[in-house]
Image (cartoon, rainbow, N blue to C red; front, side):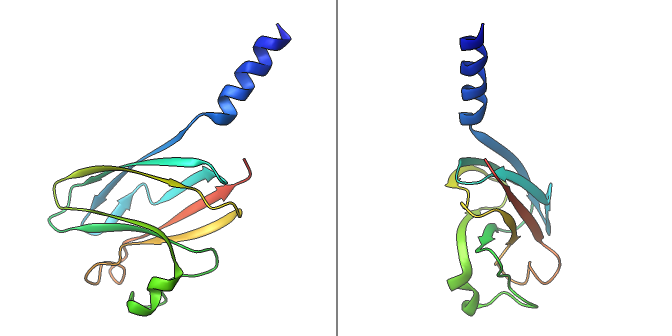
Length: 124
């Protein structure tokens, strides 16, 4: 019985994390995402908007300020783009440092009109 419990707990700790996100003009639903540090994350993204959108995770402690621009590229941890009316599945490894990471869309003023979110990374 103890062995079965240990196997169950091990399976739970190694189970993949999947997040389903809807991108629309101009927001993420949901806009807050919680993931375990250092684990593989699968994002199922559906763009219900009329234009392309990106899902950009910034490095810990950084954000775009008032406007997303070329100077922000060095602060990007990971990103993916989804075309209008399309869906995409993408994988990334969550940062190993716990904390709150800034998420935004870097296309055509989307950040400026509020297309932002938060990735919360917790201990494994």
